[in-house]
Amino acid sequence: MDFDLKGALLLTFGQTMQMVISSLLAAIIIGGSIGLLLFLTSNTLFLKNRIINQIVGVIINITRSIPFLILLVLMIPVSKAIVHTSIGPNAVVIPLAVAAIAFFGRLSEASFSDVDNGVLEAAIASGASKLSIVVKILLPEALPSLIKNITVTAVSLIGFSAMAGTVGGGGIGDLAIRYGYQRYEPEVMFICVIVLVLLVQVFQIIGDSSAKQLDKSSK
Amino acid sequence: MIEFKNVSVSFKQDKQIFAAVNDANFKIKKGEIFGIAGSSGAGKSTLLRTINLLQTVSSGQIFVDGENVTNYKKTQLRILRRNIGMIFQHFNLARNLTVYQNIAFVLKAAGKSKSETDARISELLGLVNLSDKKNSYPANLSGGEKQRVAIARALANDAKILLCDEPTSALDLETTSSILGLLKDLNKKFGITIVIITHELDVIKGICNRCAVMNKGSVVEIGDVYAVFTKPREAFTRQLLSHTNHFSLPKEILDKMEGPIIRLTFKGDNANNPILYYTANAFQIGFNILLGKIEYINGLPLGILYVQLIGEADTLKLAIDYLAENTADLEVINHGL
Image (cartoon, rainbow over all chains, first blue to last red; front, side, top):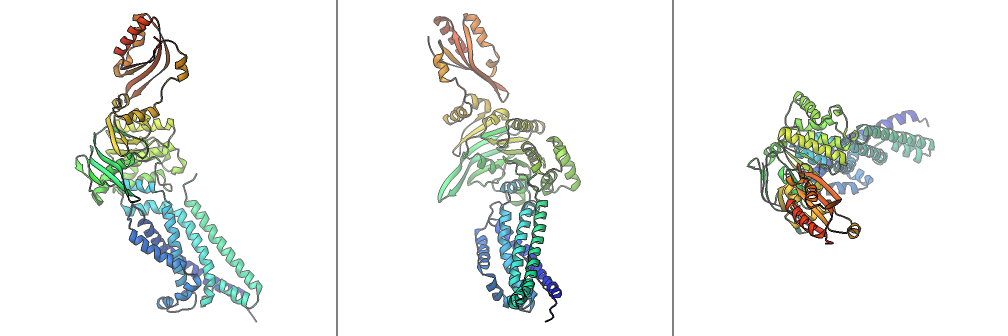
């Protein structure tokens, strides 16, 4: 069989990046907002509201407790409704995004909670509006930790995206399973794993260095 | 300037009502430095936070400048808070913002333009002696420098009141006195009313004009610092003072000494007279100072001396009577007559 490994790698790498990047963006924007909402509704300085906090918390917990493979299948009708297809990278983005939003929602809540409450109290005492405190104090103070948690989310997404093959989603993980495992071509599997390892490393290095750059809390 | 009227704050804790502040009733005058002392858990911090409504009261009213602010909300509350600066034990500066950005935040919150902000920050940093640290991050400042930045931030919008929550408790002795000096200067220069809560009585002695003593949520004593420290009315105040002002002769020394040993207390004006010298001369007796100190509270001296008197028993009795008349307090500790 004439198998163009280079072409297949390029194609599947592109698919993986497409899945990871778009679901990561969804996680940052929607998951981050949910994390912020969870934090604000838990803090007496802002908008403490136990009912909203618990409802959102339970929804996140339920989503997080569904195994990703099951979520992939459960989300097929949703993917069909939103992207009008149930196969391919576009369709897989939906369950990936849902999982990533719930995951990063919790992580970002922790990032916001780690901000020194005294700093926020001082800002409240200065008479600043809550919105400006969130934008100009809370976000910069939480940013290094948020970036670390975005990195963790991205790395998990690379792992999740490898399961995308089960619903015809493509990607490098899918290539590794179909050619490397099912067709007994260990070198394909090996190369795929190397690519994934490198990808994770790159994400980790970028995340760590930018978090360090933004963190001014040590000398 | 600030008035507490029947102010109580209670929290619900494990289904029990816990009174953090219990019926506080007093006034803080414009332009004074007012201290609130008490051990930890006495409710000092809670009471302080009711002034800028960081803590809502369960009952009673807070008046600032004659206005009942107890129910201020939203914009009204934000404007009130702009006029009341606050500093904290752990400084509470945003770590990822520079000195400039930390102060600029509160100026922009009050709607100041970029140029007004820049000018005001230069002025403020000059005031707290940190002009060269404008672009530093808090992590690169010492504790004292961080507190100076916090003071600059608190006063940025021309605050008329400065609330200080244990402002020197995280600082060493030398830095403490420099921060207290700065607060005193600001009080003199701008007439800012300063309210300090602290468990360090030296802070109160050092800069306060008047003070209140709190115990278990209640204000037990209130008055001029000098009066409270030299003539405490309440048992709790005496107990509090004895903890931090431990000053007495070791028992072994007392047992070894012969003849009468007296403890003299000098207050106010009579602390400046060389009364021991006069007495020794007039009655022809000798004296031996065993232990002594004079400290200044709110600018007034308070002296305590332990003196062994040497001479004939009859003359000593007369001398002791004379000393008792001419000092604030005299206690014969070791009689030996």
